[in-house]
Image (cartoon, rainbow over all chains, first blue to last red; front, top):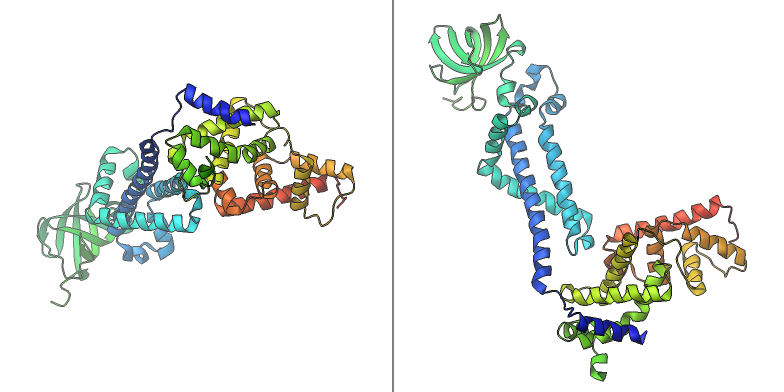
Length: 238
Length: 191
């Protein structure tokens, strides 16, 4: 056994074996942590898209769709992004475990730190509007994406279910003419019972959402009119 | 040299980074424990174990700058030995068929794994239990050896295997369960 020590020392000297430089190990460590941060940041971007998609929807209209909140929620969930988010969160967890001392951390601590990191960075990304921007890019660039994601536009372009949206072309008495989001012209009939939300301005060029009943391919009877943005309750006390 | 012998492992590591001779002292401290650990994990002949141990020492020397003194040096050295053994079996595309344990090591392992209160008189029975342990998957055998033969604490096993504490505890518990299951399957009822 004594020989083993001397043999090893001789081998070290003869083959000029030396300890690898500290910077190599340090850069490896930093590299792994950069990977963790990159995955968390990507997950944060994804959660900002999820937030954008869910926040743009009109959540109070589910009773008009004859659905309960739960079923409505399931129908509008952005499953593509949620799956992606799950994969990234798992990847982040495994990456933390792969760090030098990752095996020592309690899994609950890792999971909660990742969740807080994703939410905090996601909040910041949402505030600067990157979630909406990425969604916009995906809508135009990625095949099948637009068909498979619930958007406000899709939600309000279901005339057969009583939801229509578009831009006012003309206003005459108790009728409106609008271009819907697919540039199809509709005649909208208003009655005395039609609720026009306080912040709606019925004027040419205004974007509106209409709840009502489709009469035929070009005629729609309105029971409620809302502005395109929001529920139109602002100015209700005016 | 006498002064150096009084140094802690971490201090010796510090010194060995600059002077390979100091590394000799570290090797002296760990050659026996690591030799036996490698032997227990493999069924290699003594010369082959020595070759593997030399590779482990070279690896330790090359990685001295990555040693974190928050960790026990022995755990770190065992980790490198463990990885080297895994690499070795990957290189030669085989797995250890048995654990070359000494009789006293088998006794320790069997007593701890199946909670023996008294010594086993029946040698045939001991052989049968050995066979059951040998038939365990490597992940269980390894952790049982570390815990009951090397007598390592859970924290040390965590550091050696780089696995969370819960995983280590689960592996030990499942290893014992598997062993009992195998003994039951083979109608070994001599406890």
